[in-house]
Image (spheres, rainbow, N blue to C red):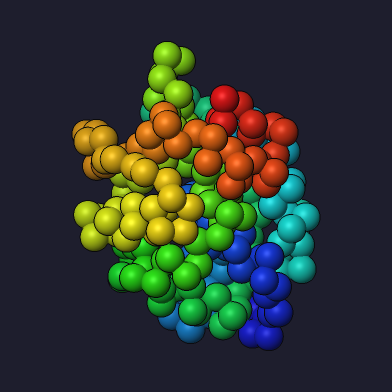
Amino acid sequence: MNDKLKISSRQKQIIIGKLLGDGHLESANGKTYRLKIEHSFKQCLYVDWLYQELKSLATAEPKIKLQIINGTEYKKYWFNTHYSGSFRFYAQQFYQGKKKIAPQSIGRFLTPLALAIWFMDDGSIKSKECQGKILNTQSFDTVSLERLQCALDKNFYLRTSLRKQREGFQIYILAGEMIKLRQTIGKYVLPSMQYKLG
């Protein structure tokens, strides 16, 4: 445990993006938290980049682990940060109990870099024929989705709609917004993730 972690402005933006995406905060006592980062090994270049960015907060270099789900083996690549009270603010903002939410003040936190991290985590194409992009936000409630759509519109002038899925709603960034999206996050999206932008 390291209760005096210094988190830089750039690291804060990355943490925001991760918490909107696949990142997860974990606590053993409700006072100190650690950020857990885990992806498929296919995204190892992305995880290695995240580790270099968050190295001053991390406990160790990324590691490989194998998971067997319903008889199928999956190769994961992961690392954790130290437990620290420095992450308590993010836990208070992004969680209600154990459920992840988008905070009311998300518009203050959503920078181009944070959006790029969120997109690299949860962005995808709708189809080869459609130019619009999807953010897989099915785990968020309707209030969080409204906040996220409002922040995307207010901060970046990105128009979106919601697409109902069995597990919840996706945020769909309209096809006509792709130039603005690329101008906003293109320089932050890693070469290994550029396929998501098309």
